[in-house]
Length: 101
Image 1 (spheres, rainbow, N blue to C red):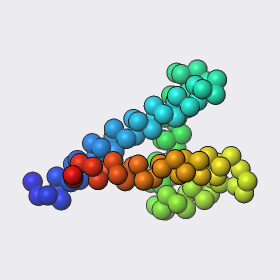
Image 2 (tube, rainbow, N blue to C red):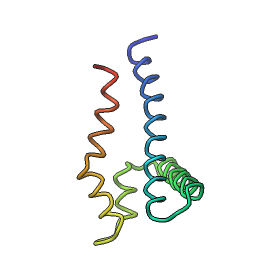
Image 3 (cartoon, helix red, strand yellow):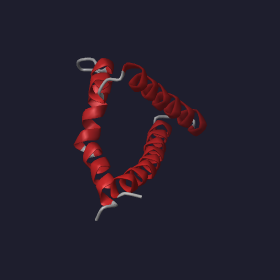
């Protein structure tokens, strides 16, 4: 197995764990907002499934799809900005690169 193939193999498994981590965090956030855990988890999973379908169907960069679901002054952009202010993208990138330390 080449180093490139090994890297892809590792990234796949890291991304699966990171997806589970996001699902857990989003579910916990929904529970804090008063949604029952089973319903919250199912809605989070369905939302991610829909996002994946859009990316696959439209073959656009994720940023383009993000822009489509944002509205000026809306809750989506406020939530995204809050996540970024708390290091979301940086945490994901550092997590992916951590296996290489």
